[in-house]
Amino acid sequence: MEIDILNTLSINPEIFNRFKKQGKPVVIPGLLTGYDWDLNYLVQQLGNQEFLLRFYGKDRYQHDKRNWESIGSGVTTKLLPFNEYAELLKSHQAHEEDIYLAKCSLKHTPLGNLDYLANIGDRLSLKHPVSDFNIWIGPGGHMESLHYDTLDGTLMQLHGSKKIVLFPPNQLNNLYPFPIWRHLKNGLKTRSWFSQAYPENPNFRDFPNFKKALNYKYEVTLNRGEILYIPAGWWHEVTALGDEMVCSVNRFWRVYPTSRAIFSWARWRTYLGFLLAMPSILLSLAIALFSPNRTQKIQQIRQMF
Ligand SMILES: O=C(O)CCC(=O)C(=O)O
Image 1 (cartoon, rainbow, N blue to C red):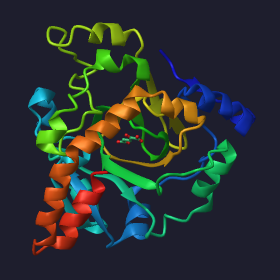
Image 2: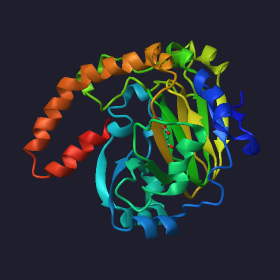
Image 3: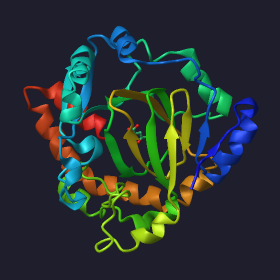
Image 4: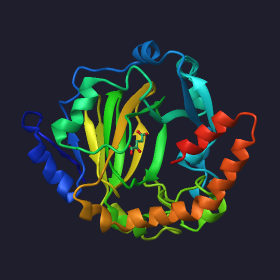
C-alpha cells in the first residue's frame, strides 16, 4: 500500500492536522527543496566534532534476529571525529563494516540552528519538540531494522534516498516484537520495540501471523527534500538506497491528540521495558563512573535512550 503525499501547493497546518489527529503517516514534499547535505558540505560543517558511531558489523542481517545480542543504539559504539568517519565512507570501509552515524544531536554544531529546519515545526503546527534535531548518516545499503517509536517523528531527507517499509500500530502482535522480559537480562542492549522478523523475508514457519501483517504493509521511497511524518507506534524499517552516503535528520514531537498516546499499548509496553531494564542500566552507570574512559561510557549509556 502507498503512503499519502501532500500536495506541495496545499501544505498548511490544517491539512497536516488531519494526519496528525488520525496518526497516519504522510510524505511532505516542498519544505526542504534546494538543500543538499552532501559529504563535502557535512565535512565543512562538522569537521572534527566527535560523534558516537554504531558498529553494526558486516553480516548482522544474515543472522536470525532472535540470536542478536544487541539492537539499534544497544550495539557497540565508538566516539570518532566526523572527518574520520567521512574517510571511512569514502573508502567504503563504512559500507563493508556497516558503520552508522545514528541519531546524533546537532545541537552543538553549526547545523543545529538552521531556520529552514526550525521552521518546519511551525509550517506543520508541530508545537512541542521532544528531541533536538538528530542526524543520521550512513553508507548506501545500511538498514535500520523494523521498530516503532513512542513519539511522533519527522524524518527529513537531506542527501540520497531511503526506502521505508511501514506497518500500522494495530499489527504489533503480528510483527513479533522481542519479548519485554529480555530487558531484565540485557538492559537496553536488546529492545522490545523491535521486530524479530525480517519484513522482506519473513520466516513464516516461526512467525506465521506475519502473513496477516503483510496485508497492511506500506512502502515509500523518501527522496531528497521530502519529509516523512511517522506517527507514534507505526513500525518502520529504513534502508539507505544506492551505494553512496545517505543523510537524513529527524526530530521527535509530543503526540497530539494526547488520547493517541494514552490508548497506545505500544507506548505502555515500552515503558514497562524501560522499567525492567533499570537494574542493568544502573549497574552499567556504576561501572562507567569508575572506568578510566568515564565520559565516553556515560555518553554511550545516554545515547541508548
Ligand atoms: O533513518 C534511519 O536510519 C532511521 C530513522 C528512524 O528510525 C526514525 O526517524 O524514527
